[in-house]
Image (tube, rainbow, N blue to C red):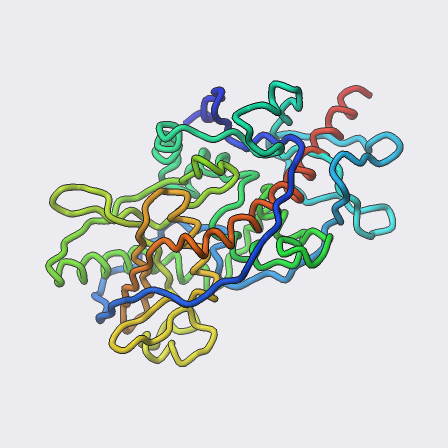
Length: 371
């Protein structure tokens, strides 16, 4: 499959321009309801892993500090070579310290900052143009298969995805408590993603298909038959720097109507426990609510599924936790209040960290080509 067509309303990677930072407000809160039942057996099948799946949080590492937009460093930019295949985080200074942000491109060319561009539907400078609903649907279709599909990787690059969004929204930088950009988070956005597979990640990959089968069986037992359809990446039509790859789309088995998203977790730490037993762990994603469970609003997975719903346009998710002893289904609704608090933090990170890095990389490549 070739690269996505570069039309006037889209490109595989967002096009950076100058930026207008937004302040980030409040903090997360507590959850939705759920159901549970024993898991059905099936042979584990390898399925597509998602890098940066939200299992565990990397510590923040400062990449460089920001400065007022428009300020330039004296002297000529250092020469560098940019290409679509280039991977790597922000450059460090000769002394090994933090480097001030200026401008770069991660395999994409910066858009013009002319008067015409600045007038485009009054959108904030530095943010890519919105996509049409038709383009969003086309991208989702063309990226099915996710990590096995080269197009999926192209459309993920230089976007904040749902899996990294929890770490970004809780970072000191996104909340205005430091000017130092966390390098590890920036690297996950611009494409420098680790290929390391931990035992927990491998466990999730091997058991995801089994969890989906158990979910479908539970819904059928409850006389609400559904089928789970594979999906690609959803790029938010209004905020095309945001994207998400859910584990599937839940459809009515009789009509084929899209009902909700599906997000599956197979916790390695609690693989041989019931969900009730796992809930005794204060760090576990679910908590007991009488005879059901709820997803904690303070847990990173809550932010992840909210991003997935925003990007896809579907307002409901079945959040499934599967262990060797039990499968629990927890419905989660889109939370507009939570999203209103979270979106500005993600946008601040994009405009104040991602865009300057992409512009700096692009600028360095231009200087290198002229030498």
